Length: 329
Ligand code: UDP
Image (tube, rainbow, N blue to C red; front, side):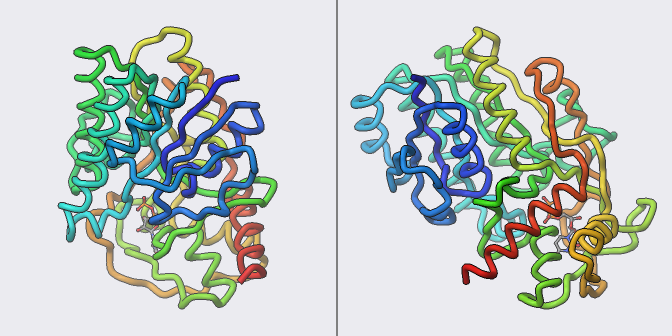
């Protein structure tokens, strides 16, 4: 049975990954410091949780010398653009330095391959759309820069030490487990769909629409919302790709369908049957008008096939989860 280490497996995308791996009969060890993740996001008893820091070299040495892993999936990172501008040191420490510790330990213990969570933010201001893998990488904030630096390290580590990896650039991860057992939980929450749903539930103030004067059809920003279950699926395909002996690579993951903030609010209204309480607000710094992925490479090379491309389905799964969360409170 394949044994996989999932770092950050108690977080939003990581926990959906763990669920999918267990359903596919993989053996899973989760390493998570629970700084932003939740212990009860790991739904099955047969995933072992080690509470610890990916930057703890002694812990990694112990783990890699006592257990054999067939692959590592690294989800643990800080993800807030605004915070990264205010506190770059934290971002470079967590996202770059700790990942370097992981890579060194993997090389030393002969562990691999690695699937790395990257982001559309590695591209910076889009020069054309949809964004494919050939797009220039020019991140405009420390968050994007930190992921870009790791992508660069991964190339160098392959060339020098033969560590095989796939970096997956997520566009806007959204939705929740279709079975409703787990979902998105960020604290503080900054993402559009949960904030719109919380506004409908009256659990938060009205949604602020950050800018209506963008050069898009309705003036609000367009993003590529990709279902978290589809994202998890791409990681499995990427592992299989590397296990088959294919080279280190990077792929952009999205639906290829852009939806504006207004279109997302319309979807929330359709799904919940209620209007989204909202108010117009100034633009948020660092928000490009339009960010949409060209995922043809992931589809053709990895055989990845996103199942939940429809925005109403993505919102419906998120809505089921939010209602469950409210009842759990
Ligand atoms: N957005 C918004 N109000 C909010 C949060 C987000 O208008 O309270 C907009 C944001 O400007 C962006 C889109 O929704 O255009 C998606 O933002 P999110 O933070 O969910 O993801 P990001 O695109 O920043 O990764």
